[in-house]
Image (tube, rainbow, N blue to C red; front, side, top):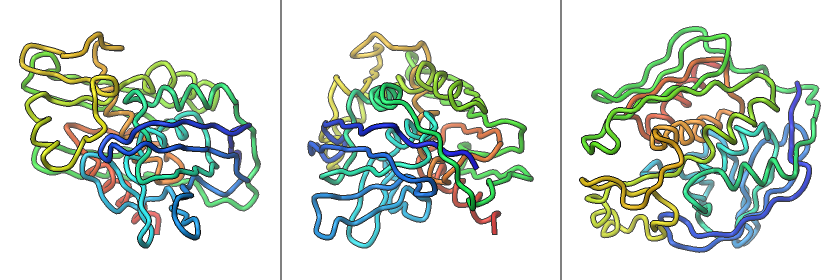
Length: 283
């Protein structure tokens, strides 16, 4: 099985969206078969938290991983960048509880990976790739996420908001089989899409102890009269960001099955439920 790791160390420093805490991240190359995993270097015994579905401990407005008493929040953008750029094996050292939001997208992560490049690896005794043989659907009301058998890996998403500046949006992104082509399209089509929020929800979220690190520099904010901090990077930047989140959450499977992943008005919670269901079918 062909795998990849980064060719050199990557570092970034920034503020977490929900905690407001500044953290420093080092991403280091790892051997074939190591997978992607976090290390809380600020805690005693340097606890390791694997980037796996079984480690998910919370999905409220972000995806959080945990093991014992150690946790790491808002992992989806960084993990999407690693997976979207074809990085199978990486040690992610972080000195705090939340991955930096940076500019609200995965662009800086993806560009850093592209800058250092990848190293090809051969895994002799790796697990067989996950296979989707029948459609899998998870829904809650009119929201849903699905995995449909397909000869290639594709992510499609739909959103629908009453605010006219967002409205109804759909986008579809094909992850190319070739690692180089897949990473190139991820960098240009998905990675730059920033997280977004609704103006009328901000006060409530802040009172709930969330988005302490959010600002107009790291999130798009939409109000009844339109975007508070334009311009957008894409006309449909919000739905592209939802694909970014979906890629990051499903990366916890380890590798992406050949399937069409389809979502509508979904959430981190539904994304993870789909990943859990896919793993159940493996056994």
